[in-house]
Image (cartoon, rainbow, N blue to C red; front, side):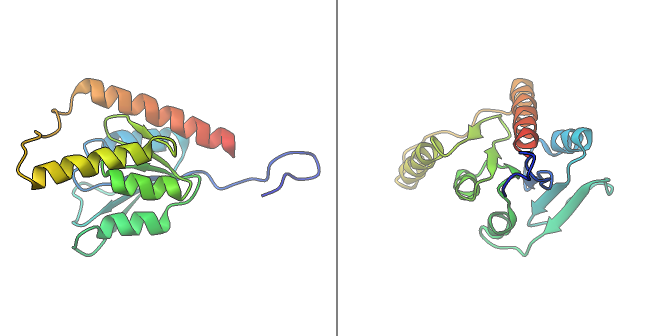
Length: 163
């Protein structure tokens, strides 16, 4: 959108925080940040999410099946949105759509590095399928949670400044 006659950018809708919610360990943190900034939060999952309704939080339950939550997110994400996901292929799709993507451990996926992350993920998947024991992810720690909150706050502020 072009600036108005005074050089001021037009009012854009605020970003939405979209969460790949199946197994996501930082849903409550996303809700708190969303509430602090007055942003809508959408939790997308293959199963009903427990807990009471929360103001500003929309819960989307998609049909069961491989990648149905990922497909819903990729189809609905906007260029100002922030997607929280540990799924690197989904992060890649969201970054390609212009959105910001963040892992629950605080890794920000950018157009410059998401391809490398995807290639590494594919290599490790191939090794596991070939019988090589690559180990799983390390346990989720309070330090991971802290890094996530810091990076989410930075991304929200950047998205708000961009608008």
